[in-house]
Length: 125
Image (tube, rainbow, N blue to C red; front, side):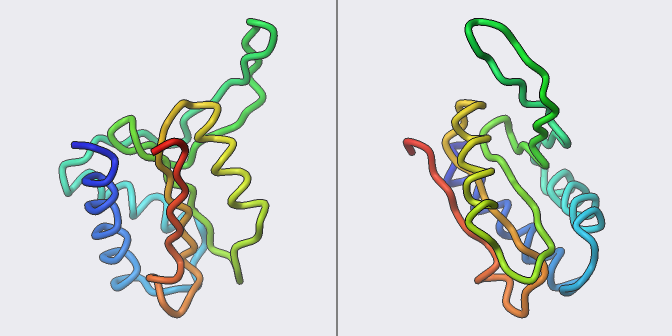
């Protein structure tokens, strides 16, 4: 599957989780339940993936962590905040650049309409 096909399945899983749980829970709750939902839909999922920084050909583990990596292609950055801030987009853009992945979804579960809570961020896609 390519990134767009994976993204379609991810969005389905996000809708399922949101429709069953609703808004207002902690990010950690959505994180765990979304992993379950993604796996139940046959997707390969990695959680809390360490993302090192490479500088002058040296590797630095600065504890950047990708929330969820799906099929080794799509990064999910989860939030449960009043509103997404520019720094959230910058964080996901940085993760995309450092990892070499092309697509990320920034998801804010603390919204009255999950359609407005999912933001697509692309890196040379």
